[in-house]
Length: 244
Image (cartoon, rainbow, N blue to C red; front, side, top):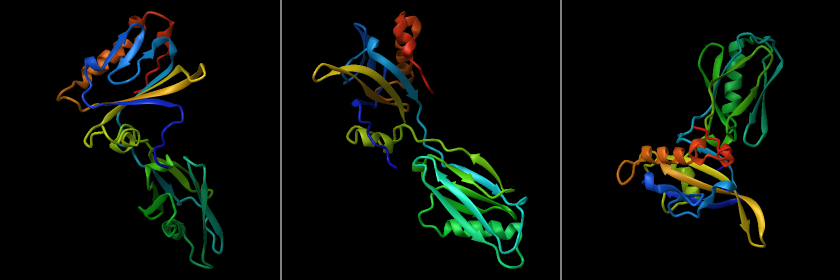
């Protein structure tokens, strides 16, 4: 599931050299370089997310305490968090010689034999194996294992934010290959054609690595000052919620 532009997206700005002058408040309007000003009173919400390369989820499963039985069916279900689609992997143990280790090995094999699996399985010990998310698109996964099998999220999924791939979807012309962008998202009211008031989104990407021709730290300081309750000194300031 690749990044998709939002239906209510009004405008996008890519600041490759963000500095104090890149953002300002003029006559009660928040102004970013090159964008339509946003009236402070019209802002519904604000979210700021720092750059993240993204992390693939990894889970560790242990069959040590499974009830071992010959000629028995065991199932492992893996649910895609992005789509809620689930895939169940079934293994049937042999008539003799079944152990917790052999059951573990069967699960590793059946998962890896599925070309459409959203995870890769790997044996890591006598009774342990891991499941690793193949791509960030699945936004993590949920494993439902047989009774007795422990499931531990060793490495949680983290969405990519502000990567070149993400920003390219919005602005393939101005994105820089080596940049790491902070993402600023504003939901605000705007009158569109027909005098209809609706909620739209403005997204600003600011390069966190900018030091030549800009200063990211100065930009963040200026932005925080302009969106602070003390500086705005009215109820509109309470609409700002920052997530870092």
